[in-house]
Every structure is written in C-alpha cells, then in structure tokens.
Length: 145
Image (tube, rainbow, N blue to C red; front, side, top):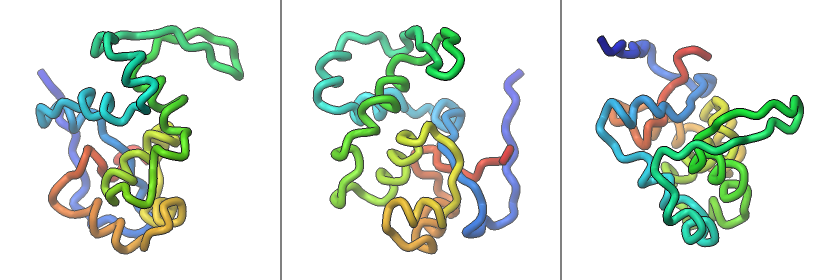
C-alpha cells in the first residue's frame, strides 16, 4: 500500500521552507530524470548520453571517507553542472531558476526570502509562484522542516 504525503492547508509565508519534492514527480507520472538530463552542462550531456536512467555510482564523502551509492545523474548535476556560472543566468525563468538553485544547494530547504536573496528576485513574487495550488517542478513546502 502506497503512503500518500499529506500537506498542511496552512498558507505558506516568507518564512516557510521549500524544497524539491521528488516524490511529487513520481506521483504525478512526471519524467523528472528527462528534465534533470536536460539540465546537465553540454560536456556532461555528451559524456552521460549512454548513462542508464537509474544508474548508481560510488561516491566518497569528503569528510568521512565513507563510500555511498548515489544516483549518478543527480550526483554529476549537483556536484559539477549546478556549480557552473551558466547553470542559472539572467535569462533563466523564475521557476527554472528556483528549481536549479535547489539542485545547486543539494536540495536543502530554503524560504522564499532566502531564494529571493540568492536569485536577486522579490521574495513575494517567489512566494506567490511556489505557494499556489499549482505545483511547479515539484517545488513544495518542506513538511518535515
């Protein structure tokens, strides 16, 4: 039996933490991995063209030296592509900029105020965009935060 996450009906505020809810993608039959692939830098789009969609890779934690299996696509996107200057530009749409900023920071939760500061966009605009009835790219309030 699949457990469905319940979200609060409380209206989010500027201090409400948000994140990318990857479960939202699977629950809504979205091909999020296709979108992640399109977010790779040109170098890695070419290098990882043959990467299986769910391939896991070894990753060594730089602090503990512990080896962990991680999603290969997410790892290269977050550790390399999201760190380039071209990942978020002035021409990137607001929703895509928010999505990419979450990828760049390892999907650590952020408030609309924090997103606004980092993207140099009005926090109220960000809040209105991500707190409406429509969910964009899985960006939702973080229920466990």
